[in-house]
Amino acid sequence: MSEIKSLTGAGWLKDADDNFQSLKSLAGLHVTPFVFDTAANDATSPTPVSNKTVAAHPLAVTIPDNAIVIGGHVDVITAVTSDGDATVAISLVAANDLLTATGKASLAIKAQLPMAAVIAQPIKLEAAKPVTVTVGTAALTAGKINGYIIWMEGE
Image (cartoon, rainbow, N blue to C red; front, side, top):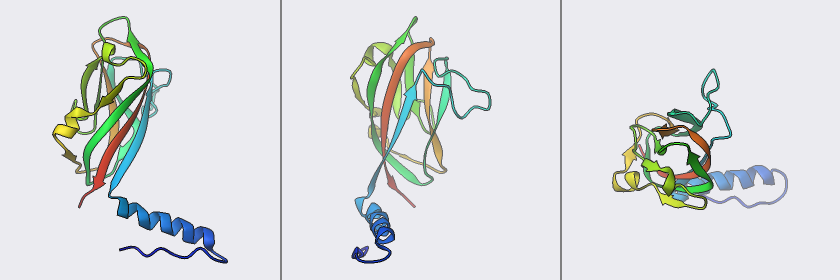
């Protein structure tokens, strides 16, 4: 078990940071947040591509090697809209492994969706992976989604 350092005198700020770092491993679970915003461009592409397009959009957020992903949640901040029957899926390794393709009607403002696919079938990563949001069927006209991926450290 980690030892908590006393916060006294010189070096107290480093000791406080060391305490937080040691407690991190006690928690066991990690939550990695991400944001998918149609007002932004795909930041990982050498030539920026709009997040509104029908495509896989890897985000700058990654889940580390050997992580065991056991859950997650989506919070819709701005309703997902489209001129067609657009869908949104979220994945790490294979299509739909976090959130299966979900129609825009289910992605209304303030909608709260569990990442049911990974809850039913947890994933152990063999390498660090970016969170990827895939827009399917039709381009989006608006939408902002905050997501939270729950994982544990594996070996």
